[in-house]
Length: 481
Image 1 (tube, one colour):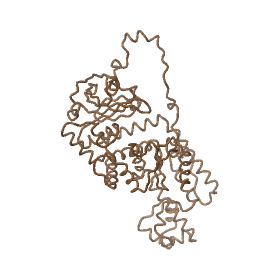
Image 2 (tube, rainbow, N blue to C red; image 1 turned 30 degrees about the horizontal axis):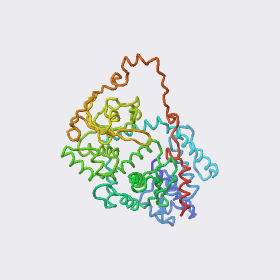
Image 3 (tube, helix red, strand yellow; image 1 turned 45 degrees about the vertical axis):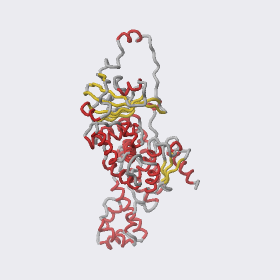
């Protein structure tokens, strides 16, 4: 059901509520308004929208203010159940049942109405749980990555929203400070609080009623994670997010809040000025951009994918690769031949052993970027890679461009060059014949299995989050006041 349909139904329910309270029949109200009872019946049943010029007359006839008609809240508990049943019966899950809709009328017993609503809500919940599988998540994520590629990884509307909120804090240049982030939160009506009992399934929790954003103790000022996590929590409010109705919408919201945080930490105007100056000097480097704004190497590399194509016409690629060569994240609009599975998903695919994304981890110096040209089946690419390690092991962050655009980057003079013919198995995935002959019949490795490949993603109001833990947390902290 569309949002406009929801509002039409709610307004119709409110008109019926106020008419009944005033002791008027449909015919009585129709006579006062110079219309017909059948037309008013359509309005009250949410099948006809009320036009703006009609609202003052209806409000006056009912003895209420126009704002009473415009409220988006159901007028009473019975109406709330009726509206929810109408919404559920208009959804795809109910349609798939192939049964006629229940007529919603005042003759429908309240208990029966409540039971119907609860049953259909549970059917919707089960359907969401069934679709929120790893396969569904991969499909949705692949579609989202393709969509972002079509946007050149640049979202102007979110850029503008971030620019407006950053201006509120008076930020002008350099790294966004913790104090400025707190000022931005205050402008939106929030306080930032650090607690040590956040539910394990959450990163932050926002209490909309009390105006609080709860952050973990690891984000106490001095840790740069505070800024990004707090900004992402604020982004839900700034971008008018509502609880996601699908896993695809959940992933889109996650992308948007991360994008918003990056826009605040590295504002478009300041970041573009920095990149323009470096490009003019032919000295673009992720590490300089990172240090100028006080962010992580990964955040800096991703932000450069947002800006270099949109503002400079430079097409780029980005990879986060694990120690075993598996892709964690990837983006490209420069035609780098990133490996994919049959569905087009890149996550979990193994990159070629010849790519610097894997070779950098075997080099001794991890404090500076590693540069390399790679000849691939899709052309020659220049890449810069920084390695690191985290709770889940070692990884590499790679940012690069096609050969023609390497001239703008520091490290273009590197003599490191490799030839990759992947997906040809003879490139790096098929063992040399002598090695295969020696061990093919003598080796029996036991593969490590990730248990999450068998599990459905947790269901609930927000995918992946334990609703009970969240609500208990909020109740506990609200009681502390």
